[in-house]
Length: 330
Image (cartoon, rainbow, N blue to C red; front, side, top):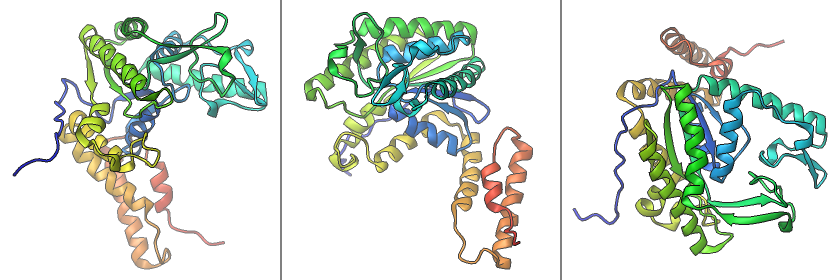
């Protein structure tokens, strides 16, 4: 039968993602989609320690600071804008009205994620754009401009080497410290349209060439074609959100299935199927929660959880167990 699309086949890499792994995801909003699905499947995954980060220079600096492990943020790194305190390294969801509380929250997250990185054996990086905004007169590339005036920044698209050099340096140091570390590189399928179609393509092209160079230089590193799956495999505006820039849920589902097929082995998929049944059952809202039939349903689910916990004690079913607890009446 004639095919009316060009489906991309994603080869299985030399390593897998398994439930005992500790996975850190850093980068664009695409890491949020993949990371949440990993968390829902009970993987030990942490997402974006400094919030969403789009450009590779900020990704490298985030990793460098976490790898150091003892560089908490200082009060002088906070800036006040639109009545909120920010840092130029963090996404706006870290911002706050009280500088002391904001700094305390930022550093609590930093300490937790630096400790997680110290034992992390899987790293997923999603690069969004090669376009950067450097704080004038001689400040760093910012991870987030926080809607500050444009004249505070110097705008520049990074070259391939300007992307590769800082990422290679920090990733190689991570591999030396943790030889079992495996790295997945990907490019966000979200198009950055503010600068137009041509500039978006040049930016993505720089990222693609940089990923190829990093994959060649760094052992245990693979590229996952999220960008290509949306642009060349699905290739239709029905797979986009109404803004015509972000992938629609059906596209994210498709890319996730390709990701899972590449990185999960048969044993992991078997356990994930059992986990999926339990999480789906926990999301179910019963019509008669006090009925004997529903209490029997709760009992069976708690037994299924107990069997999985006995075999995989690192899985966290606390949320599901709470959903299956019998209702109590005062």
